[in-house]
Image 1 (cartoon, rainbow, N blue to C red):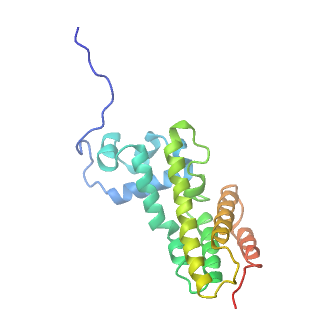
Image 2 (cartoon, rainbow, N blue to C red; image 1 turned 90 degrees about the vertical axis):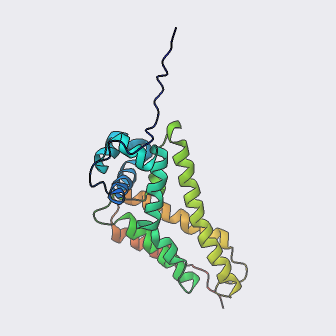
Length: 209
């Protein structure tokens, strides 16, 4: 007896792509859905409706949901979260820390955008289906720690941090604090309140000679 393979396969071409398709705008829309709803909370129906395309077009242009999420996270890194890369270019370690936390507050409370941070709450509550996204975000956050750590190692070598300062711990302190700011923002905390807390976090920042 002949059997039929009923497994779903991904379309191999741009079938069903609407005229005037704007991949950049579609990816921006997907990023905002993931930011607001998280990986598991963002259904394909939500994503394609926001992107203004069919599932067939989504698969053809961006891949499956996991691949779309990674592309959306790249866009987030280069756009809303680009403050991290800018912060590590500050001339002093204290300047780096200040710019990093100020950027976290601004990002998490930005008008017209979802509250909080995609990199923090995007997959915190993800189940088994979201394990890859959860791991991707853990790697993303660790990448931010690495950028800060390397910059603070430079500051230590230059005497901008005192002897005995631990670049790894300073970097993780800032990232942990920024993650907390994002969670508080997602819970409705006001920007001014979060900014005051961020300022307090740096009162004991170690200074070099």
